[in-house]
Length: 209
Image 1 (spheres, one colour):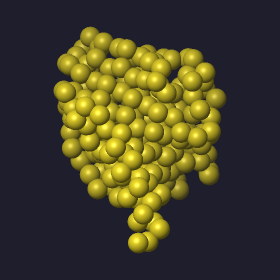
Image 2 (image 1 turned 45 degrees about the vertical axis):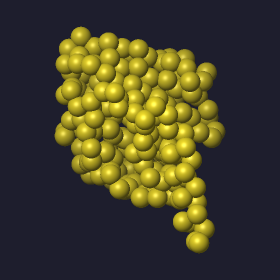
Image 3 (image 1 turned 30 degrees about the vertical axis):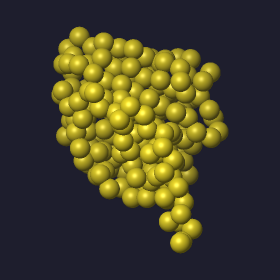
Image 4 (image 1 turned 90 degrees about the horizontal axis):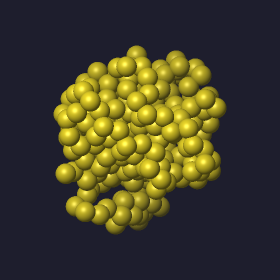
């Protein structure tokens, strides 16, 4: 067996073993099956590769980005993943995303003025919830764990960073559709992404309600 294949199989077994409550893996650890680049947010989707059981994200050479989104749409669910991000990187986890790339965003903005684990509404251009204490629980080296839950309409959104709840938000309007795809972001702009910076995701899992 080739070493690369062994690594991919091992990564998939770890992901599947960690699922609880009837969940399943969204990323198989070896390919982007079930995912598509989305030409939204002024970009072509960003550059995405699969390396050693990880989804690795980077900007396009012209500093544009976009989303990598699931081919399936989801309504009420809990999604979790491990991520690591070089500084500066501006990425995030999108929930119930519309075709134009708009949806609830759990921020992973690893910059001096950024936020991780907050809730952003792209259509409003503003935060719905900010969690200013994120640096106290964020791992600057190695992996971080992010979990998010969305139910109902108007939506009730909750998120946890490394086991600490960072937001619990009950919307008052049907801001985004009742269901949509799950997206991982590459934010555009020269200041949003370092020349050698990357964002990495693994163990992407979902439980539907």
